[in-house]
Length: 206
Image 1 (cartoon, rainbow, N blue to C red):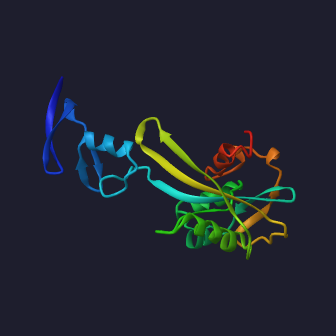
Image 2 (tube, rainbow, N blue to C red):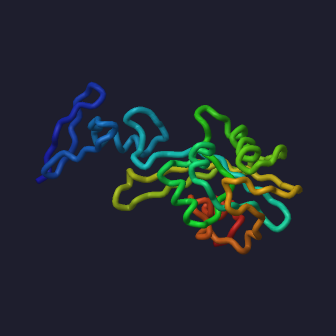
Image 3 (tube, helix red, strand yellow):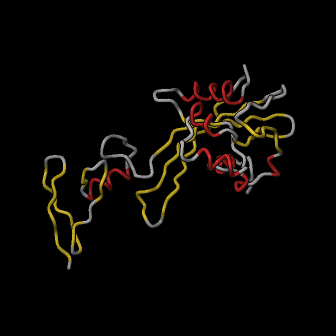
C-alpha cells in the first residue's frame, strides 16, 4: 500500500512516497532522501552527498597521426600505469591482459589544466620530448547499468590531436606502440572505452 515516510534532509523534514518502506539511498554512510538523489543525477555537482556511485572521470586523450595511421598502444607493466598515469590499481592488470589497444591518455591530476595534462601525456607517457597539440573537442560518455541508473559512470574526455613526424620509440610500459590505419580498427579492438572516443570523433567507423 502506498504511504509516506518522513526523513530529515538538510535540516528540513521531507515526506517521501513509499511502497511498504521508504526508498532511500546510502552515500558515504549517510541516508539521502530520494528527492535529493534525483537532483544529484541531474546536476554535475560533486561534493559530499553528491557523488554518483559509478563515479566520474576527467581525462585527456591524444589522437596522434603519423606515417601509417594513428598512434595506439598496448599496456604492459600495470604497476607503472598505476604509479605514473593514474590507472586504477584494480583495473590496470585487466587492461594489460586484454591485449587490446589504448590511446595515449590520462586522468587529470587534481587542479591540472587539460592543456597541461595533454602535454604531460605526450612527453611522459608517449616519450616525445616536443610537439604541438591542438584541442579538438570535449566528449561526454555515460556508461549506465539499466538495473541501477545511479551506478552509471560518467567520463568527460578532452580530445587533442597532433602529428608526429619522427619515429616513436616504445617505452617499457607499452608492449606494443605503433601507427595503425584507422580503417583497420573498430571500437571493439580497444580497452578502457578508448574506441568510443575515436568513434565519436569519426576517426573509426565501427
